Amino acid sequence: MKNPFSAMWDKIVDRGASLISEFITDKDKAIQLEHEFRMAMSKRSHDYRTLMLQVERDQFESQQETIQAELHQTDLYTKRTRPKIARQSWYITAAYAFATSLIPVLPEAWGLQAPDFQWQIFLILASPALTYMGVRGFEKWSAGSSK
Image (tube, rainbow, N blue to C red; front, side):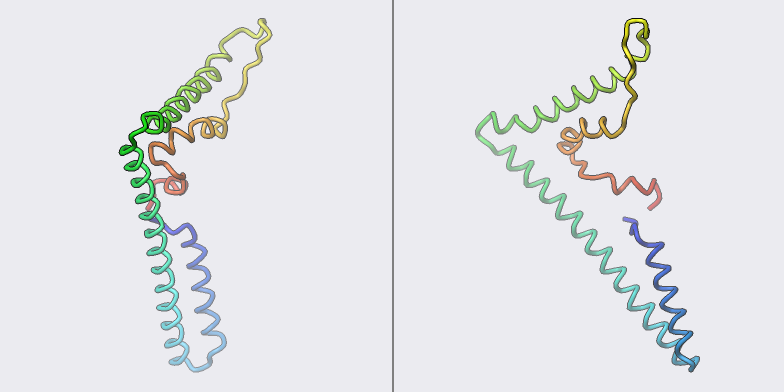
């Protein structure tokens, strides 16, 4: 998992190391302090990545517990509610996508003005279905395919 603040973190560490070099006149002591500073910051970065992985694991475990509890329900209404909501979400999302792509084809002479397709509305409509399938956020894909 890529740290979203890695570029900013690198700038902070480089700036801190350059400040040590500016204020410490003894070259050997400055090199030693800069090394200790970089090691401490590297440990902090590692701790951050470890915590992020732990949060992701906890989210996954929570999702799995919810799914397992749902599967072990004896009440069929409760057992079928989340899949039904997800299915209805997909239907509405597909209808929105179809309508916004089909309506521009209709003649404007009928007095129909074509609405523009908006990703925000599409994702809001699809969010119950995406959540049911396990998508909790798009942070993983926001930085592109680079890891």
